[in-house]
Length: 170
Image (cartoon, rainbow, N blue to C red; front, side, top):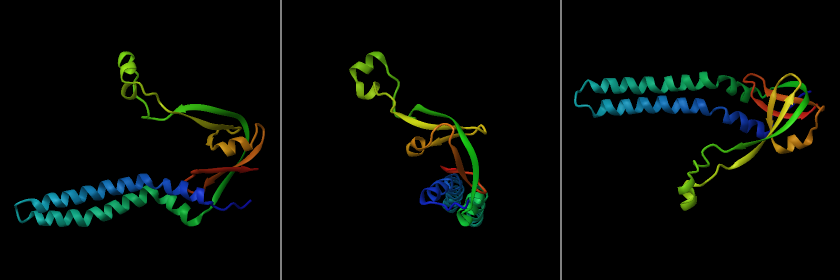
């Protein structure tokens, strides 16, 4: 069956570009800081180092960005989906806590200053499918409620980067 990318799928793939963007900004920002350091220097030959830093920094940053994200970039251009047919073996709702949302409860100070020392972590639920081939998928609430144990589903992945996109009825 031929599946097309949805807007949600494109958003998921664009979010996968963020590590490459971070590396690009680190390398290019470092080369700009190095260039600034050499320009502020008092010796005249530092300008040559500044020019070298600027001319090598941008191509190196672009190369690293492309090498980190090349499979996702190809997926965004080609928009082809890989389909895995599986059966849901087990469904689970897991209670997780948001990282960094709470503080350590200190018994005496927590009662005296509850906003600062007595906050608890914010809970949220994670919906999980266990498939017959051993895969474990985190899905949204609508998908979790739409399927039951024993249902055959099609799991859609991007073709080259193999990023999980969504689950559709099989």
